[in-house]
Image (cartoon, rainbow over all chains, first blue to last red; front, side):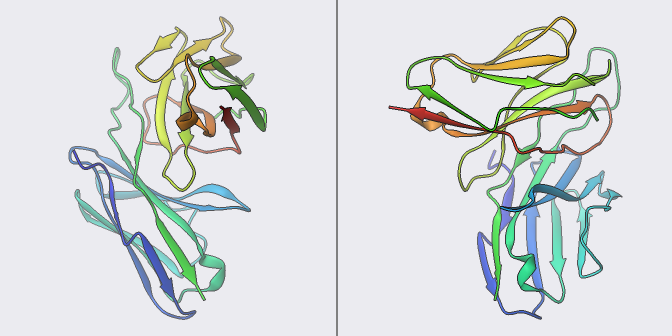
Amino acid sequence: DAGVIQSPRHEVTEMGQEVTLRCKPISGHNSLFWYRQTMMRGLELLIYFNNNVPIDDSGMPEDRFSAKMPNASFSTLKIQPSEPRDSAVYFCASSLIIPLKPGRQNYGYTFGSGTRLTVV
Amino acid sequence: DAKTTQPTSMDCAEGRAANLPCNHSTISGNEYVYWYRQIHSQGPQYIIHGLKNNETNEMASLIITEDRKSSTLILPHATLRDTAVYYCIVKRYGSARQLTFGSGTQLTVLP
């Protein structure tokens, strides 16, 4: 298993440009999460999907951010227009979330290697 | 989800056991304790989780007190590659909810 795959690994863009980050979750996982990490704020959840449906996007900073999951094997996080304060490492994670059932447990999240975004 | 309290940093000698404490005094009955770590410039990595019994896997052991208000992650023989930020997270069981990361403990394994 190749794990969670994110692309690109690094992105440098000019302020005002559109940026698209991509994520391929682990096959068979039903939940996908987008996190952002900065020195000041640590790891923050932006949005998460369950069975391709956005469940909670309350962490999305503002309307400039949008995320989609058109199918179980692909998700995008788009920033339009980008600003210097968006510079951060963006992580995608996936997991298999099993509804409450005696004897069953939820498993850990698997994170990708991240995309380091620099907006100049 | 319950909040957690961890020391900001700890050192450990290579080859010795690293014991990382976590307080979660407001944990409720259906919340699990999860541990993750993040090695510099990498994504967080799942280590272990438990409800009330002690757990062990190939990476670590998790000791949860009987009242479940605190836990300890044990790395039995720390190596330099274990230097990382370790996060203790309490998460409700059985729901598609997110992990909320605090500031964690910076563990430095010294040669």
